[in-house]
Amino acid sequence: MLITTPNLTRPDETYAALIATHEGLSEAESHALNARLILILMNHIGDDAVLTEAMRLARDKGGQAA
Amino acid sequence: MTDLVPERYTLAFRLYPYAKSPDQEAATPARHKVIVVGGGPIGLATALDLGRRGVPVLLLDDHEGAGLGSRALCFSKRTLEICDRLGAAGPMLDKGVQWNVGKVFHDDRLLYEFNLLPEAGHAFPAFINLQQPWFEKFMHDAILDAQAEGAPIELRGRNRVDAVIPAADHVALDVMTPDGPYRLEADWLIACDGARSPLRGMMGLSFDGRVFEDNFLIADVKMKADFPTERWFWFEPHFKSGDSALLHKQPDDIWRIDFQLGWNIDRAKELEPANIRARVDAMLGPGVEYELDWCSIYTFQCRRMGRFRHGRVLFAGDSAHQVSPFGARGANSGIQDVDNLAWKLALVLDGAAPEALLDTYDSERVHGADENILNSTRATDFITPKTPVSKMLRNAVLELAETLPFARTVVNSGRLSLPCTYDGSALNGPDHAAMPARTRPGSPCPDAPVAGGWLLNRLGRGFTLLTIGAPAPEVLTAHGLAVPRLALDATPEIRDRYLGDAEAAVYLIRPDQHVAARWDHYSAGAVSDALARAIGKE
Image (tube, rainbow over all chains, first blue to last red):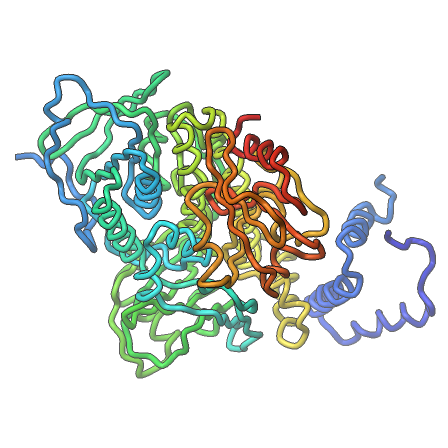
């Protein structure tokens, strides 16, 4: 079951860290970093059903298109 | 004088020279029980399996033996097990190169290596590499052995089928020979005439699927190299030959090099020896001496026929389905077609099973073909990403694979051929929840060491009742079939592969060594019902 309720322990800090991770990278390098990050997080989650649900939600822009 | 059946390719082995048959002078067309068209690996195996079962079979081929060129190269454990049942595996194993280790490179970096067979206790290795002409030769040698023992198999070389006329109770064929045409009739016709199947074309049947816009160059080189016997695969290789490359060992100091070239190429130019040598030199590095043995450029498609049975005509192997070469799923899946078809056709011809049993050849092997096409398509899409974003994600996987083992599970340079489980087949009977998933109904029996040899060796040519710690009669007779019992001790391998958490087990095993049904005790009624189901009587 995909968690869509607030779940980040430190939302502001984590988001700032995500932006900081991309600092100094070209757009192409940033896209590549995002790709690696997605794969690492996918493995952490592991569950195919949860991931499929997350992909659907991302494709629907968080549910707007539904 | 015109050559009525000209050779389209050079032979590696002349196996069944043309000889005039009395059928060619017959006043009315001779009727045969089964005619197989095509003398490749699948046609030869079909003739051998049927002949070994006592079914009279005639094989026609427009050549006189095995064509030159390594072509199908990697033969899987399941293929070897089936060939062993047919009496052909020994020489294949002796001549073939065994390998278990694969290495995956990106550019010039080794990402990781893998071992194919972590599980001990199997008679055959995960794969052997053996050039297709040798596979065909050994299959033919086994046919000669079977003929010597009385198996009713006949092979006719330079007999080209020019027309096929299906009828309700037979199929007529117009056959061309060096002595002119003649007509034959068959109760059943099995088309093993390859991806470009002339029979499929003559019958106007479609063969739909996906074309992959890519060309691959095979360069077989002969050299005394000290590369280990491993499969080496490169994504975006540093020697700049294209998107991927593969190096694989064959018998006789020959190495298969497979270069992905892309779509818009000048085929004739790429096949010039100087251009092939330039690619090979860049790959092997300076100062390596080699000879070019055989070279070919191929493209591929992933596709299958809508149905593999069309009345009295059955399609098997590449004539019915075609996949990319990644994963060694071509010849290996064709041999599984044979394994599935031969016993069913033999039972139908004996009158022991209804004709409807043959429809399960279609449903089970279509299931197998779809699984192969899915795997092969996924490998192809990983090796050649179709969009910029899929290429970025693919390269992200490769970047992570060097240090993070999880990413290696996503790397796909071909998921190597494993036999499919016929989940949901109409022939499957009861399952038992406490027993291992890998031996559920529909699964191919995993081999295991047993007293005096190997389990698969001990299974009979027909159905077998396998018991582990369960009393049962030595032979069950039902539905016109005698099913012998094979009682096994619960060794660690048998416990792991067949018993699981159950106290005892009774398995009904099909003639193709797939599980039909299983229980935790013997009941004559239950086994008899499952047997009826497994031969299409339900």
